[in-house]
Image (cartoon, rainbow, N blue to C red):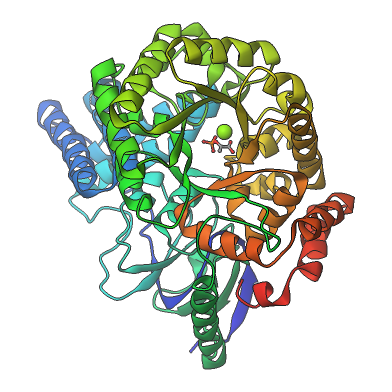
Length: 560
Ligand code: PEP
Ligand code: MG
């Protein structure tokens, strides 16, 4: 039995879990001594069959996956069907390279091009290499890389998980997830929280933990204990029970102890997420990421197709609010039918509302479909734009929304410029929602996909809190509501700070709603305001979190 050892990463999906380690199989590489190709036609046929097998395996997994997972798997399957990739592999085969070597060379050529393009394309490199590694395994006739077959609840450990892998994990068997890389707002982290699986990212040396080693993970604090002693497991178990009992004591609309209402809402990615979230104790949807529905679409969906999808999202919520974000395409969320071509710096380029300005046809057809689905279901639909930077942009968007007969138009505040000028931006619309994932990225000039920059991307950074505070102050002057729908809304201690800063709604992965409701119910609004002041007065992100922790209710800390 290994010695007990404690390491700390970043907790991205709450809860504790215990189980043996299952290591995700590393990518398969071609053998260095692979025989050269002598029959190019036969070899090309094998390579073609390998890519086709990879595509159909991913599509088969998509068929049984839920919404978000389905789109990601289909998008990855599209890479395996890419004609250019096959052609590149064919060129290497024709030049005499072995089949596996040819596939790997074609993938690396593509990866180099993607990396040079940066932004969204660079982000797709993980998926591209995943496809390449599966195709190499297929031509070699060896088991595919990735999550191995296992039958008892386990902790899945990987260097990094492709979103496609995370999305297809069996919830009944995956007790927890640990990755060595990955960031707090990466797709993988968002999906793990959406699936309710405790997860820790950025754990040093994770891939070196031997298979079968028992580990205990804490998805709140990010602490991972290797070979924990039975005392710790019993303590975590007791804490899980205490937490469940504590969560059972609070229900209904979110409110502070002195009855200041803060709406608790769900982040969703499509109709199946809506089905899963609607029966839960929450007040509606605070962020429907519409682009998730179309990640694998090659052509723009028609108004009728979109209307049918939106109806399936609205119906389960009855008369509860559903806040829909118009397509946030570009940068890390590419849509094939809304591609404006390569850019030097896609995260700073024509993404979000800027893309809608270039392609108003896409915005108009989406608004027409949202209006039709809202009419047909009678739902309380509110529509907001991503990546708004100025008051003029907000006005342009609000006019278009209202022209379609949708009464409530809003903006996401995720650009520091818009946060600092929120009074003017909000004067043009009915509400705002802080996208703290991007707001942290742009405030700290740190790419949110870059796991190594997690410390800078921490929403506890006092500079990020100052920018949020400025946005709330501006909103207060206008009397218009401002909420949060970034990952920070699901951190119970940060939720107290955000409430103290003045937000009136918090939208998060449904698995996080219970603990946030409990945290709010234990503190009064003046206490939240004091915690917010303490956090902002701190010098570092760590100090801000420690200051709040020191003053928060002890009964809450006991179940975190
Ligand atoms: C955000 O940026 O905080 C946000 C909620 O949007 P997304 O994570 O989809 O960019
Ligand atoms: Mg965003």
